[in-house]
Picture 1 (tube, one colour):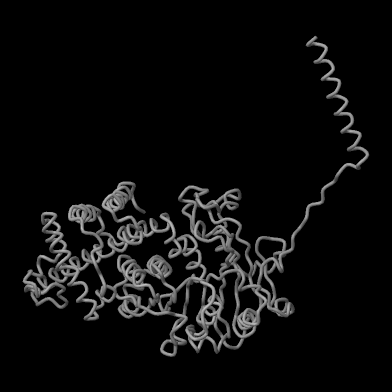
Picture 2: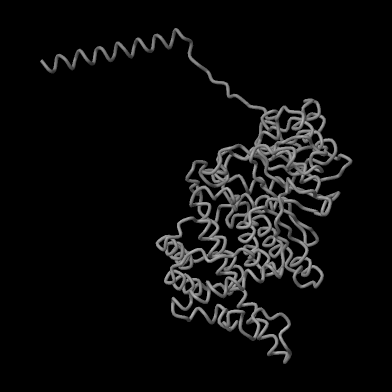
Length: 512
């Protein structure tokens, strides 16, 4: 949890960028990512120096060589701890002419640190702004991993609050709910094919640290956590840089965050690789057949991106793999052959487990489209018996463009610090969703008039379109209202009119 003082320091950094002429929030976070990356390189080098000195051995992984670069600048001057003390114009010269070329060189060499820095550029030419931001970042205490991660998350939150770039971010509390629903394990291999800022992957890492702390004390599991567990793909280089830094500051040393157009490239290399997929992919409409991966078209013949992503999830999952993904509601009831084919596959060929309908304001102010969380397991041999439906009415925030919190901070999210009362549940359904999910046997006893209920696979198949929209199965109970007979209502109206008329007559007499 960030203190108010740290939040104020970050706000001041953003204000400094804005007053310095860098007004695009995505450009601000990109430049901050570069600077944090440079700072982290110095931290890694310092740690290696200390280790080598303690063991009396040469450094295993030196970042900065003990010589000068091609332009004659000592690599020692490229270190954060060194140039942060330079005068503003000298700092600008070193960072612009030497540090950033060094980052680009690391990217070309394919190091794990520099993969996403191939086209890194300093995005402003104001030396005083650079000096000010470097000093401000250096003053924020980020030695602790949790604080470092929270700082970066708070910075990312400013993208979402600043306008059109917010589509890159799924609300953090919705991510938290989905991760807890899927309950990842230390053995999982996790993928987000539309990773963006890697919010889902970061949340999985934090979940595992909290629920499986012994994992990091086991050599094999620790190696898997840092090098083999996390896989995120995107086709936006800026998002890749931000996502990779997000994973890094949250303590994952070598995540696979890489460039890929998930719907256009063939997936033979990693088909059936992942045991868990968590995703909220962008749904941009339609693609041309010519640009769509042929292995996806074999699963479902369509140009609709939302259906192609569902085919992609099935393609990437191993048998027994699970998925928790967000889809637009049209996937659940669309009438085209491709829509029906996907739903039939989920119900009859695999194991569909849950449909959680989200209120339409969850993604405001960027999109008002109605969506749902779909949870399923890839089996290839069926297995759907009952599908759990939940009608989420509130997520703890107002459903207008302002998205104002409706409860105190300790009562928000899927696992609030304080238990909610029945009245507070009406403002935040997430804890109830999680508790009901963890006790599904009891859900079979609920009627379809309640907020959650079970529907058998047979009932879904009987619709002949494999309809998965909650409203198709929910029973609406209408309260019976007793009305007076019309003659009595008319008599009452006449009596009221007479009473009003008499009152007006008395008022008129008093005024004479």
